[in-house]
Image 1 (cartoon, rainbow, N blue to C red):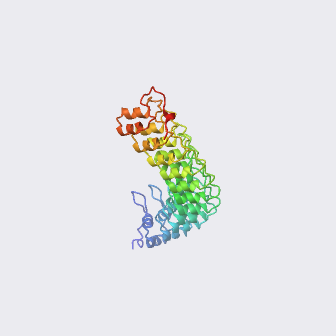
Image 2: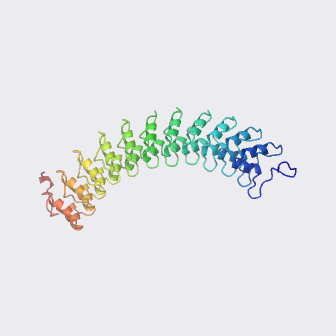
Image 3: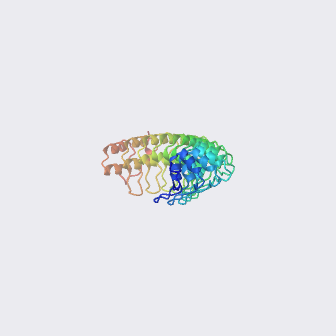
Amino acid sequence: MLLERDDVDPNIADTQSGRTPLSFATERGHQRVVIMLLERRDINPNSADTQHEQNLLWFAAKKGYAGIVRLLLERDDIDPNIADTKLHRTPLFLAAENGCEGVVRLLLKRDDVDPNIAGVQSRRTPLSLAAQKGHEEVVRVLLKRSDVDPNLTDGQHGKTPLRWAARSAHEEVVRILLERSDTSPNIADTQSGRTPLSLAAENGYEGVARMLLERNGVDPNMADTRSRRTPLSLAAQKGREGVVRLLLERDDVDPNIADIYIRRTPLSLAAHKGHETVVRMLLKRSEVDPNLPDGQYGRTPLSWAAENGHEEVVRILLERSDTNANIADTQSGRTPLSWATSRAHKGIMKLLLQRCDTNPNTVDIQHGQTPLSFAAENCYEGIARLLLERDDTNLNPDAPNLAESHSC
């Protein structure tokens, strides 16, 4: 009735946001009203609000109103790539981000739609956003376009669509991307230098890690550029048993690569955190040295486990005849027995003292104390009793070391 009047202007915008009746009808999805307005010759289908300059196609694409999008695209005066001025997001950008598959299909049918236009703020493409959000069908539709590059990184952090999908544990999206032979699985982002496999390993995404490791060309030892840690190192520290198992099944995985800063091996990190199953798996690899000290403190895996009270890890390590229980760290000169004594880990002390080759009389270089003097100073009666049960424990620090005369 209003449109039948000669004194009604259908293009008049409100004063607050500069939006027209057609803009509001489009945003609310009132398709019949949109049709009615578009039938008018004097209607402007490209009017945008004055606040963010968001146009009709922008609103319809964002909300997933495929019917309205189809109506607008049938017009010759609609620009399908027009973006809002604030964030420079195109209709395709918004439809992909929100998983509006029908709208994405409609837009991509047009040859003049550019699928690689990135937003100004995020500098991310529609494929990047769809991959992160886990919109599987949108990803499939986008990849059907020959001009879509699956390895195109965002301009902010240099992350590929595969990297976003791996980080968010969207297994099906990862599978879709890896089905393409031109998808590179080893591209690291520019922010942290992390690869998709690195992220999957750290977060324990076993399914994602398996798909990546099955892909030809994946480097399982590729370390991130920030801390120089390998996927195995990250998985071992976090106790991601499934991923550790997958990695160790590969002959080309080097289990002894230490990071560049704290210079700790996967075994050292797993022992420190008390990840028993991970420690067992690592020790099954013949090239893993149970006595390899870290490069920063010179501490062995046994030393870290003893200090932190991980009794089962200590037991696992001591089951190996080649584990040396007397290696002192280079920073304080303390042995695993010394650390266990000072932390009052009685169960660990029992395990260590059951070994015939454990020396109970080592003196640390930091405090000049033996395990027994630590126990005496801190009134650890039960621990002192354990030490005194050994006939080679020296009560007199000036007396000669009796370790060599001890027998089990």
